[in-house]
Image 1 (cartoon, rainbow, N blue to C red):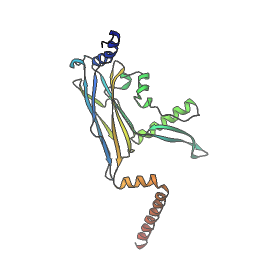
Image 2 (tube, one colour):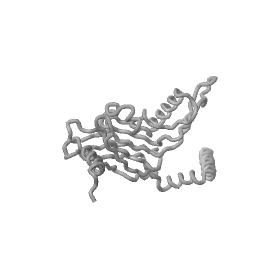
Image 3 (cartoon, rainbow, N blue to C red):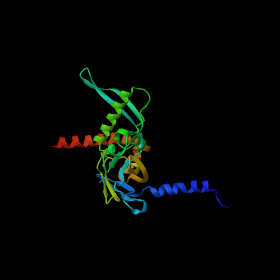
Amino acid sequence: MRLPRAAFAALIAPLMISATEPVLVPDVSQRDIQIRYSFTGAELLLFGAILYPRGQVPDDPADIAVVVKGPLEPILVREKQKVAGIWMNVESERFRSAPSFYAVASSRPLPELVDDRMAAIYELGLDYLQLSPGAGGTAEMRRRFEGGLIDLKKRAQLYYEDPKGVEISEGVLYRARIPIPARVPVGKFTAETFLIQDGRVVAGAVRDINIEKLGFERFVADSADRHSWLYGLAAVALALLLGWGASAVFRRQ
């Protein structure tokens, strides 16, 4: 059975398009990061190659941006103001789903690679994160709290941006190093790699990363999550015991 010429052209069109666009071959140095008592942070290496059509690197080669995201989580941000000489929590904003961790690195500053629309579609940059604020409040208030949330996360080293964090060798091989802080949250992370050419994303790839606690740290985290009231009683009892022990030592001196 012979296909009509129009149908045949429709079938091979995607292959012809893919053959004219560069292709990503990415990977990450660690698919599993284990947090133990001695964990002080890690460095995640994202690397790979850019395959150009017919193996020819163009005069203006493509750029790379990598994004590492942690699990989404609801966050309540409170704003302190001075009332009658006392700092108090006055206003607050709840974000339904904000990345617990976000890091982006690129071969050039992102404003040189993509416009605002493209950056918003792929969440390229801290200014384009989709933080999903709660209903209510003015646009100015939401922007203020979004800026406050990003600032707090940056101080905790949980949000990170490096406009020159991707190295590209010979226009083909690339690598980027993303610091993972000691206080990184656990869960399923994603490492996204974007190939950018002429202001648009022409290819993308995702690799999953699992960060988990092991040993005593995992026992404590599971206890706090599954048996919160027992965990609270144990924490209070331990604090009382340590306080009594310290006072007994000082009385003997």
